Image (cartoon, rainbow over all chains, first blue to last red; front, top):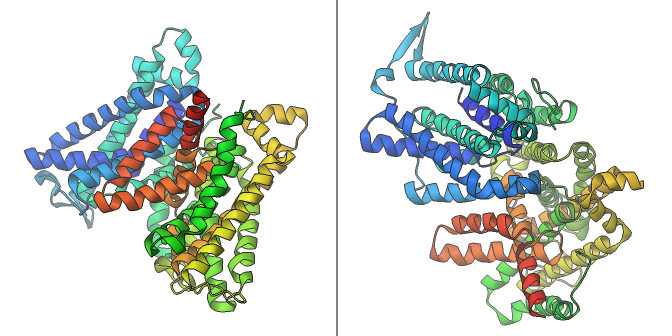
Length: 272
Length: 317
């Protein structure tokens, strides 16, 4: 589910802006640390869950406005390179502000225990993460498919020029989508902290896995990123059990194969 | 416009290159061991960066998987130098051939897609190399291979600093000469044409896929040689060399220095490695500065350091 939250943000940004945001993992890390900071000040995990993504989304919006916007005319390469630069910037910033050691936050008290799911005990917090992810997926789907804002965003994805011609402020929509996508990454970051702890370099580590999900599911496709994250999650879990030596290789191989044979992924449609 | 040269600036630039190279070659006799090591590292990464620039700056192919060939060259050199014979064949020929073959396969598959898909496909392939090395017990898994000897050449003792230094300089010069000839040849012109406008080159009648593949193989081969040198320099090789962040670092060098020129990537390598060693003694946050500098270059000076210098000299004359 964490992967899903991340990949949805990445795929939205790609679908709309045509940018593969290599700094996506760093926004995730930034979200995690922002969450830790809020918890440290207020002892309130739920507040962190709200504030973290807001702050990081704001940072994302600022970056889109100041740095990405001048590059839209210069082709995909310049944009990818730019986001790559932000990886270095953010990772070091995190190291600077929060130090290099591993930090974690306990799950909120209400979710600290375990629940019985039939005969097996299951940590309540992990169950919450799954439900939370599904909830976000549902909300996003409603937002994109059933509201006016969603219609505008979809129009922009489909044909930005035409949407602009119809009176949509595409520039503002771009900023909003970038903020939303990075905010989702930060949300994943906050949610991840009680499970996986936060450390500098967590962003780089998760970035490639997120890219795999998005590629397998189809760049720019929401259902695709859901399917892709489920596939990768299962493949990783079972792969570690059955083929510990070659599972990583096979997953990367699968990514390469999808890119070669069906670049639009499982659920993608032809993009530009 | 790119082909145009300012006559006065070019004179100075033409003398600057060989002069700087002579100074670097003489370094073991005038400086201590630390600057010499730094210079060797810059030269090795300079070879690596120049090879990537052939793809990026000339053919317009942004590869995020160039580390695959760098690491492969290093691993092949490590195995051959340790297990087979400490000869030039192990240090140069085998790594180059291995990287060329890998480049042929990866390139053949990767050039079928373009843009963002090319970036991600090359990334996926290099991560496959990483995963393979990381999980292979016979390659030392995550620890890599230590204790790589330097090759034994008749009359040359490469374990002596100044001899190894000249050996690296020789490789560097050879690479620069080869690449300079390549980019000025008709082949290089075609690559530039592809970068400029792929469709037009197709329309004019070039089988551009063949040109792209050839560029990919040449770049991979040179990256393999750089990887082998790196392994000999350090005495060990680890999966880190194959990881995609290695591709990212060399990409950073090319952009900071100036893509589409040969001196640019070398300048970028010098800036990157120099900054790293200089800054890390003052502050831990050299990455921050580097990242910010990189972003600034992408935004305001996509032609890199070299382009900035050139712009200034042209304004001056």
